[in-house]
Length: 496
Ligand SMILES: [Fe+2]
Image (cartoon, rainbow, N blue to C red; front, side):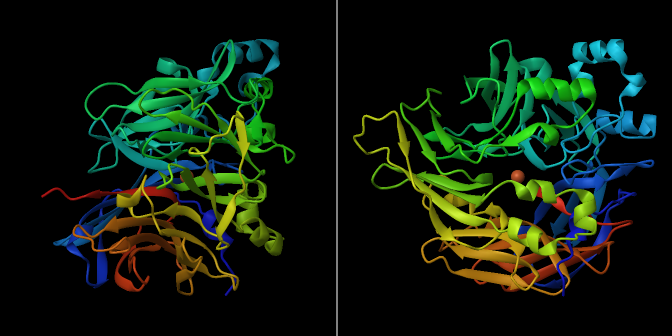
């Protein structure tokens, strides 16, 4: 069977706002009771106006409730300001990562000056990538400087946090990470009169607003690097500055000319990846920087200090950013150069070891990445109890050499892979839930949100043994309309 790239480019017109019952096969472990909430692309067009890139469509939130009294599925479109403006206009009027818009009001010099004075009106608040909880509330998260608070029961949008207004942030990583200090953090980017800054944002566990605790200058003052995620060890926050940047002048031109971000991104294959460490107690930058050969990175797997005091960083890596350009919706819906796309999708699980224990007077140390496994996959997850400490196993989703979608478990010690494959099933995101009294690192269950190639309104949450990837249970549901592939999701266990 040919890999169905079209599962990445689906459009959902109607959300399933009334929870529908799901059918269950197998036996659900009781520690899986709770809610699995996913965020990702929903509406890929508004009226006759189509989004161009898989990073752009309007968010749909999807929830699978797992309980002893039965399982249910529901979904709801995020009610962002961007969606409201687009719907009111009957077309896409706010640019996204890969979607340009026609200049509203005809442009002209006065239109352009007006836009320069009102940058915020041209920034999308479509938080379509992830969900997270802070302030004891649930939020939808994207790469924008906004978060939307959600009603956990109905998934309705309740309010909006604006980090642009409060902290000058213009983009954020769509991942929140728990630091060794216990605080929850994210990394964003701000633009000021002195150029761009990477900003570490801390989120309160109780009431209070997110606040910037550190601002760091990028390697190129006017060209901050593309950054989707960051790493966290017990002592450090780890930033990768990959050789892919967007010039601030170009970004402003994009806003004025209503073009999009992807047009301004530049890949510089002669440049290294620069690693900056921030002490998470003092927020001081570590005295040395590190560098390694250029590669394109979306996701960290884990970071930890080893017994020598060196810092181990595991991540998924691509040779270059071609995968970003493959993710145009028309390419995914009707791929012409499948071999090329498959080649671009080939990621590797990599490790760098930063020699913190070495007595070296150099201010920048070049390190050599080692390949842990050449198993193409994305959205890597580990047992969350092993975050910031030595782990052995990494889980993710990818494409097999014979064109099937798969869930993989990679052993970082041996490079061996175990996989789950079934014809026609397309795993979207893996969530690791540890057994409460776990006896081993892989003593838990994976929850995998899956689509079916042949039936667009059918989906399932597949529960697999984290040890051998055998199927433990399957929760199957029918939506009112098409089920789309989520970008990321999280598990919120039921409270007793
Ligand atoms: Fe991500």
